[in-house]
Amino acid sequence: MKINQILFFTIATLLAFNQSSAQSEALTSSPYSLYGLGVINQTSIGKFNSLGYSGIGIKSPYELNNLNPANYALIPQNSFLYDIGVTGEFNSYSNTSSSEEKSNVNFSNLAFGFRIMENLGAGITMTPYSDVGYSLLGVSSNIEGSTDSFESNVTGLGGLNDIKLNVGYALMPKLRLGLSASFLFGNIEETESFIYSSSTFESVEQTNYSGARLGFGLQYDVNDKITIGSTVQLPTSLNGNLKRSVDKTISGIAISVEDESSGNVSDFKLPLELGFGLSIKPIEELTFSADYKKNFWTDTNQSENIGSYEDQDIYAFGLEFIQDPTSYKYSQRLAYRLGYNYDNGYLAIGDKKVEGYNFTAGIGIPTSRGTHSMINLSYSYGSKGLLQNVLVKENFHLVTLNLSLEDIWFVKKKVY
Image (cartoon, rainbow, N blue to C red):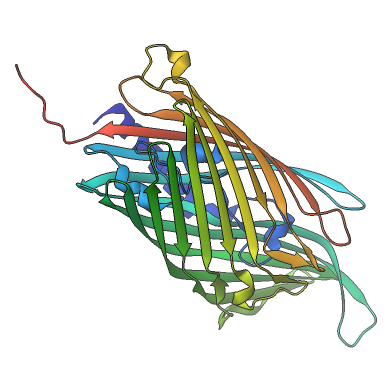
């Protein structure tokens, strides 16, 4: 087995183990993860993280493109592509009266793809769909039937995972069609605890969600320099199930008030999502990409206690420069990337949508001249929210490391 394969399967095992225990610690610290399924993940795979998360219309035969399943039709014969990613994030939060800083390390993605037969390619990706990690300290509540009050601490952690099968088929040399099938699953655990007089109380609620979703993609080469693409994610409902336990301690004696009782919660609806993308190569060394996505959250008719879901618009732009990917000079094979992403938000709190933006930059470092393997390093600076009323301003620095590797399989050795 080649070194690349050994590296892939070793890291894949570690990431799978880490993901199976991910609910034990928060993978985000955003206060906006309090709502719905948490903070929905925007990060992609490989180089697309540094292109403003654009790529629906990018034609990339040697790189996995999770943004459009149609691109899997381009995977070359005998090539086995895989991508492994991790992220590190530093956040600072502020409101009208205080500020706070936090950091965390997160699993980004695990993906592979290969050619099945002529014009047909496929792959599987595993990514976090959403992350939850919030803390509310000193929440004041009144005791029913009394003028007394108490303060409680509330924490939440967990999130959902997305395992996706992508299949791409080249209907003709310039036209590619794609199909994606996702299975989403995970849980969100909320713990509330407080002390009143000589008694302590702790309530734990774990909500499990699961469901499937279908999507479609298309890519068309207008000419050698222009490619357009589109994607559709069909609406779906995630089934919810609730488990609750309540414990209290009186004068040092523990009493179970409610033990693992089960109940149903409302299904969480994911909206219809449409995406359109374009890539242009004005010169051979330069690629420009632009995406637009529309997510129809209003049609889900969902709301939060202090907010509602509204239609979401996302604009993404990217620029990549490679002087000569086949050059013998190492410096000429390096890839330089820039990007910008603007999201007008899907959650409205107090008639103010939680919008955000980020700037991205990155570099692609080739591992050798004989393959298309690259180490992709991406950096993103962004902001979300507003300093107004109950809203929180969130600024973040995000670093993503992706090992985007290629192996050549099933090639017979020639003996002369």
